[in-house]
Length: 266
Length: 289
Image (cartoon, rainbow over all chains, first blue to last red; front, side):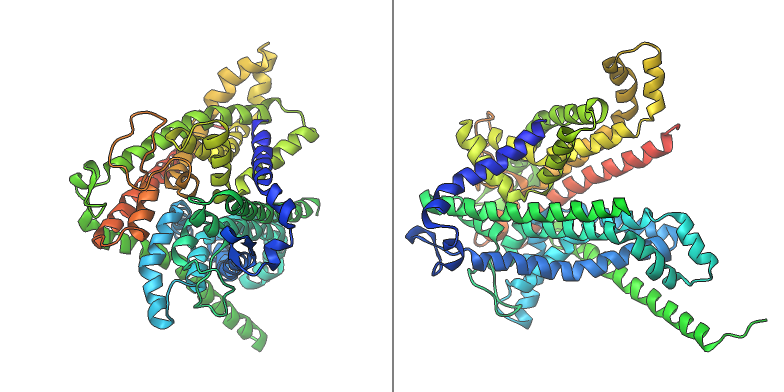
């Protein structure tokens, strides 16, 4: 009960702080203003929104296939001992705090990228670090979805003389589709909301990136960077960014629930 | 008896290709982990010493140890646990043992899922608005701990509920048939049989809490404060924020210092995770039903 109240309180409070400014300058201002100079009344959040969407989408593009295929490998191909090791590694990856990922990205990835395509802190660095961070989510949920495929179906496929790959592609993956979809959406939600790691490796320049090597700033990083000293309208604008982020995350959770439910019905 | 047809050969070739592809993908997963841990150990190992753990940072955080951050993190985690564990367990007990299956229960479940999905930086905003300002805690350990508690509440609720639901329904029914009330059943049968599962969840929560940075940045963690906190209304340093600060904000930090901080932080978190996983494995083996 309390947790329901807390969720309402979170949404309510963030909206309450954001609402007066939205009401005054109109919701369109956050997408059409001349730039992000919140102290002089320009509140364009769209570069940050692009930053968030691009890093998250890029990370998913990398982590999605790797995660799903890793799960398939663990379930259907790997010898049991190796599958266990693999699962431990994934759990380990899930346990590393985001600030450590950020630190690793900053000290290892960023210099590497700087040598190939300066300046270094960039969209690409953000995508790579995020991909690593959401990999466990994709893998663990895909694994759970594959484990839930009824054994009779797999045995049936084997009885028909299908090879391993044919079984995986024709039987296991279609049956686990909804579960994998849920996992991917939840992973995307994590990527959208991630703050510290992205903050440390993305360069945080407010701009719509034109290439992978351009620095970007995400919504979450924007809040983390400016909240400490923001006052008045600036502070309210950061709450608007927070509200936008929450809405994005809630949308993904809702989508995941819908995908999961469709699975339950058939 | 049978000759391989071209079709068989093609299938076999594809089978081999797929196998190699999967192996590559798995390598993509395992390599970064080794890389991350390897780099941390290689570069941070030289910073580790007892002095590093038990002295205060000096020279504008470019030398000395991380005692205040270590102690601060322990404060934050302990208070967050004191807040979230009773609430989380009570909520899980209600949801699993008492709640009827109606729209309200479904709404609460939905709320928990959503709470788990709220980005950590939004929790930070909420913490500032609710605990720092509305409840008047100021930027303090108390406000930061409450923020962390709210954030990790879903972890406790979900893991506790799973532990409770792993207790077979027949145990409860047997107890009710003896004339026990619902609460007596919970206290004498359900909780003793699920306590280790609940503890596993709590340990996992500790590791999550210790590693979080964003939610405490504006609610109670200080950049640099070389004293140990004296009350819950003080600000404090914390391991995770300390790593962020020495890695990005402080000039002229010797190379191995942030790596050392990262190593200690990750050691703490992974040790907690390992305990939790070992606990779970031991539990599964011990299970009698």
